[in-house]
Length: 53
Image 1 (tube, rainbow, N blue to C red):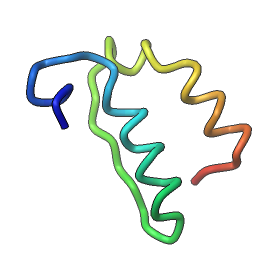
Image 2 (image 1 turned 45 degrees about the vertical axis):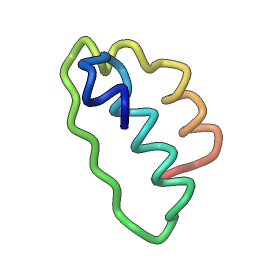
Image 3 (image 1 turned 180 degrees about the vertical axis):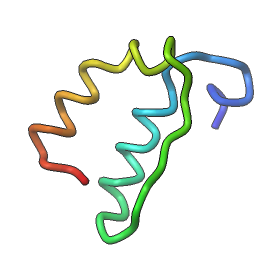
């Protein structure tokens, strides 16, 4: 939670993916801006590879 409170960009998608891995039976939503979203290509590739929701 430190990244979110200190204003770091790019922590929304990785946090949502880790929550999805931890709780696969729950729906997870991530709210992030365009800059933070564009910083997460590797995490999105991992989500596709692991077939996350």
